[in-house]
Length: 260
Image (cartoon, rainbow, N blue to C red; front, top):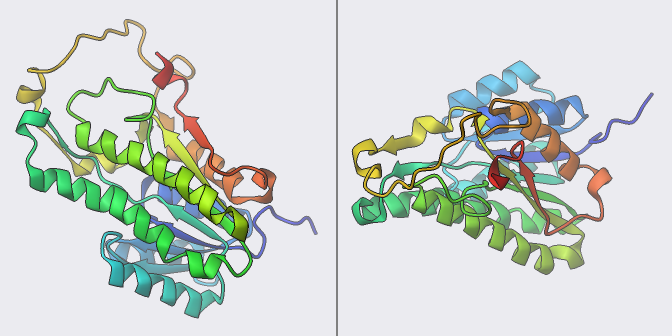
């Protein structure tokens, strides 16, 4: 029987019930892994776990910005599976799309809590379990704030994503001695439901917009947005031994969008 690339691995996925998280959970299971799917809504994570098969998937609920909830989610996963090999810190939100002048401090804080503090807590509470045998941590950042600065009004989101990349590189250096790899994926425009978390103040955006035109579109590779499954393929590679000498790397999954 052919050995699957993630055979007998256990993965912990935040934001796991939809979009990139959902697609990655499905890819991981196809590759032989068992998954703990963490989402804000228990009903959503349990529904996906049921679809994937309760022998290979566990649905959990946690707010990634709350330390006690994240520590408990890891404990529940360990109690269920007995070990941890892969962490996909994927949960995130867009926040409010508006000029800095009009951005409420509360909205700024909300994005930082989910995207930055959430990433920190997801990694922090995984370390004691991953140190036992090493493992792979993958963080979902974005082209925004790292190689793309044309989404006017996205300052809070872009700042949080730049922070994730810096955090991942620091973590990669710190955790290498334990055989723990830390890499980042930076998707471009992807067909997911993350836009549901965006509050766009369109009238105010016009105050700061710099005209940028793409007569033939800004997706020259495929002529359209990427899919969650395409990002999941890259995450699966980073989770597997095929990327065993990669850590501290940032991979762009954007069909060249961020280079225009």
